[in-house]
Amino acid sequence: MVFYFKARPEAGDYTIFMGLDKYENEELIKYGFPEDIWFHVDKMSSAHVYLRIHKGQTIDCISEGVLEDCAQLVKANSIQGNKVNNIDVVYTPWANLKKTASMDVGQVGFHNSKMVRTVRVEKRINEVVNRLNKTKVERKPDLKAERETANAAERAERKLQLRDKKRREEMDRLEKERQAEVRSYKGLMVAEKMTSNKQIASENKSLQELEEDFM
Image 1 (cartoon, helix red, strand yellow):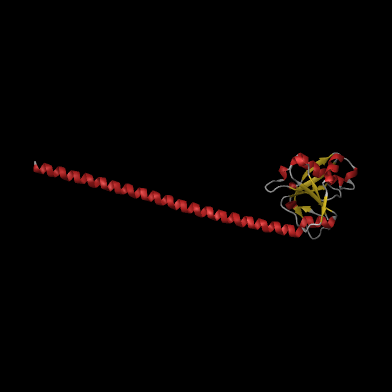
Image 2 (image 1 turned 30 degrees about the vertical axis):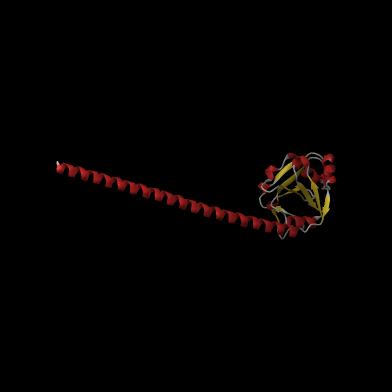
């Protein structure tokens, strides 16, 4: 079971989601998307909360409002973190999550600790948590199938981009050849014109010499 929430509407169309337990968390870790940002209460047990940003966006694109929604949801779904104030929530891109065979179910590490950010949550804001819970939807998604569908779409898009690139390169090549032919033709015309002028000058000279001889 995966729970889906909608971030504050004024921030745009953003979906926040989390697994029911550590087994769903394991699936979310395995079949995440490049656009997913992972949130967790630092040094405490909590839900694994994800924010799916838009394609082309990065972690720097997350607004303060959406960041607050995610942090509050993580805090509210931490047994220990929900009871205390001034906790830290860490977040990082899904691609930075590291999973090894020795780790327990649902446990993760990081490939690069420098890519992990921290936001301080002073206290629970019920207004935010209640608003998010009103948008809550429960689903049993086939995460593997969703990931495979996305992969197929990405491959098709890359194939189309590659085809377009080759078409543009071929058009550029043909245009360069055409311009080279034009330059060559112009050069030929100039050479022919110069030769013709020389011939005319030569003919004029010969006529003058004949006239002088006649005189």
